[in-house]
Image (cartoon, rainbow, N blue to C red):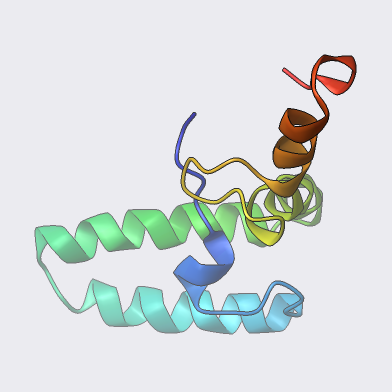
Length: 98
């Protein structure tokens, strides 16, 4: 399973942040990183660009939030099974999700 990227954490904002808060956080970080011409800053800028592309679009954000809720909010971040998968594992085959 691929590592889930928490774009809210990347931008340093809460999951229920208003679109203006998302934009402000993105532009503040992007502006700061553009003044730092290092490879590390360039990599970080790519990550925050990716986060902003997803969270800045209402449709993409909705899709992401559905995955975020299942992965992060239920404890499935970073290759760990989420709450739903733990429940399925506990009950056995009749409820298998995979």
